[in-house]
Length: 179
Length: 120
Figure 1 (cartoon, helix red, strand yellow):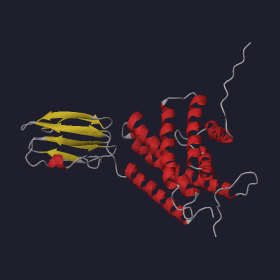
Figure 2: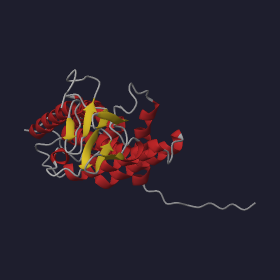
Figure 3: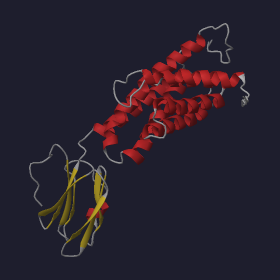
Figure 4: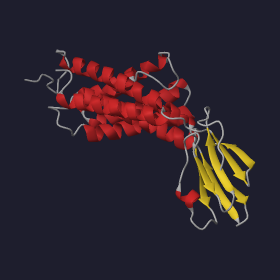
């Protein structure tokens, strides 16, 4: 019996990203009060990763979450998957710009709200151009925008609290206490 | 400090955006139907759901009417002063574009009618 194994070198960084992406997937198990409106708990993870490990790691976590979500939930390459891709893509682009804002004035709450608007904006833009080219989506805009504002704020506050909490084993890259 | 100065600004701007979108999407009475008349008679009643174009004949020639999701306009008209063309896109219930020389009119209707009847 021959034993052949393909060894893929895995760095601790890779493991960490995989763990965080899996954590971000957990939200899919939660029921949603309104189709399309979700608390976006995954964004908490992505934002934490962004603030602690940088944009590249956040992009990996977000991309892996979308891909693994598509695989696990059976929606790979279905319309919902592409909506996720569009939302995550725009959200990450917004974050890439927003993280350059001076952190003295713009904390996690700003990033979270901007990312939430980017997320819903990307999804609705794709849905409007591809799935529902019609006036119907205009009527839904205020609902989605309000949800993005509320959940973005809540998630941002959660991230700010998590970052401010002292942790012994995790390195803290961003001091969150202000004079 | 959970919410910093800039965060408050972002939250205010976000609230403003939500309010603006609400007014834009739900304010007024967006029409859902276009009624096209020629010489006073209704020739087409179209819902504003997908893009279509109509060519309506009149005494001067053909009037082109363009329907898109949520809006409609007179795209081309043989009238000399082009008043109905210059009105542009119509979105609200009760709005109308009249091409009088060619006797073609385009009217938008929604759930509520702003007027019982219009005479022109």
